[in-house]
Structure formats: C-alpha cells, structure tokens
Length: 158
Image (cartoon, rainbow, N blue to C red):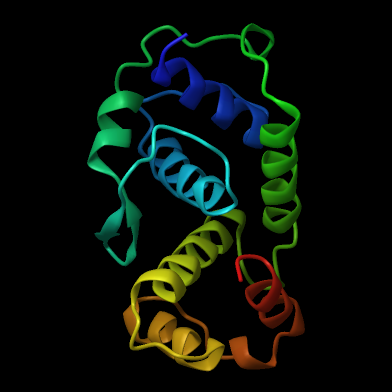
C-alpha cells in the first residue's frame, strides 16, 4: 500500500466518492482534508504545508495525489480505530456548515482558520484570526455573530 492509495482512501472515507486527480475541486478538497486530519493527529506522511491562495497547500501531497492512477475501492484499505476516529471527527465538523456557506467554502474557511491560528503567531485571538480571514478573501461579514462558527473555531483545534 502506497501513500497515493492512502490519499484516495482518505478522500473516499470523508466524501463517500472516489478521488480523481484530474478534478481540481477534488484536489483542493484533498489538500485541506489532509491538512486538517494531520492537525487532528492522524499520522500521514507528515506533509509540510504553506499558504497558497490563503489556504494550506502541500506540493508533496499534490505530487503523491497525482500518482493515484488506479482508484482503489474503499474496502481495500483499512484504517486504524484512531484514524477512523479522526476522520469521523472531521466529518462531524464539516457537516456543520453554517447558513450561507457551501461545503467547499466551509472546508476552505476551517482549513485556513486552523493554519492561521497555528502558523501566524501575530494573530493572538479568535477575533484576530477571523479578521485575517475576512482580509484575505472570505466573505465573512457576519461571522462574529454566528455561534456555530465561533463554537467550532474555539473547540476544534485548540
């Protein structure tokens, strides 16, 4: 089993559909999902992430994802209980999409928030990180008033 197979299996586990490296939306989702799972403690290849268009991106992960020429069925890879727990936890957070946000935008916001919170040390508070999100590219005019977002931001990845 190689890393490309694991990436395909992670995508399938989170989204219930096969990963296709030729689909740019799926590539973007995979980047953010793997980043968030690493932050939740799921052991992967230890990808290094930097910011690309204000969201976490790993060149090595992308290179491994492009190697997924034969998509595996979900039954071919068995995750440990700890890995399943991390994946289920992430799926729970992803399912709590606030009103006015699509699933992909919500994933983008979560991944960027966690990256900013963990890597941009000048941002000291949740409010600072939310301001940074607004300043970047996200249309978050009412985000401070949305209890779901604040609750998730304050509890998920602290």
